[in-house]
Image (cartoon, rainbow, N blue to C red):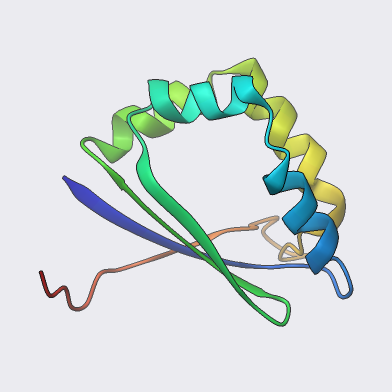
Length: 103
């Protein structure tokens, strides 16, 4: 199993919109996460910063399942208006390397 951490940033003042959208996540989007094998997915917020954590058996396979899914592509587009991105690279998410794990 792989543990994945990602950080990203909200546009100022959009925390409640972000929370509402995830409180009302589309059932078909939740199914895409299941199909990709993603579980124990949580997203944490501090001011404009977000930290997401999930577990998956095969990260590359999950990325492939999600990247080719029209529901996931539509969800990403739906979230674009509230997520900051790097002006030069267009990057929105920054994957983190696991440095410590205690079980």
